[in-house]
Length: 210
Image 1 (cartoon, rainbow, N blue to C red):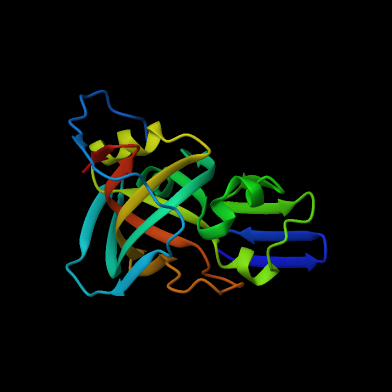
Image 2: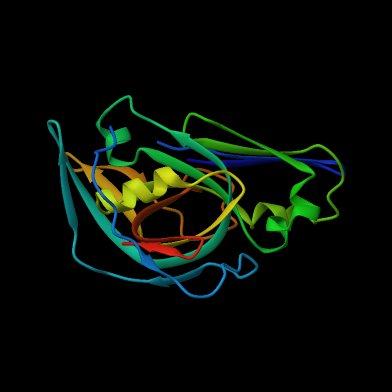
């Protein structure tokens, strides 16, 4: 998981790289209230809670929460993974933006692509946003659904859709070794710059899933 910047006056290249079949069932969502405001910064607070254990195939994963997290973001790219047990644990990556970058007049200058647990945001024309601003209002998230309802909800998300994600930023271990270590800051350009998010609640439009 890394974020590499190649910047010039008219181009921004930001890369974040890292490291299930959907069950059929009925989702029972609840109705949310206000519209989703993607202009705000994500809320994050250090947290130490109980470990979460998940067994997939022959692998035992230990998920360790390190921060409570809530973000209202615009999804610009989605990628699914299903090659191994790690992919079953975290089957979806979301590339998201917020703040000014989520506004169409700025975002229209960029193209988003995702490959191999990474997200690339490339400028096509001058966006009139400072390079450092773009770099701190864009990230790739490895999504670990807390349950099947959350998995179903995440799979309903479309590109260019505003959502609210709540849960925990986590580190993931298996066999006594760390598999993923979440980022806890927005300005990390090197290894560990993706957020590993254990999602317990999702708001899509006016509907809340948990």
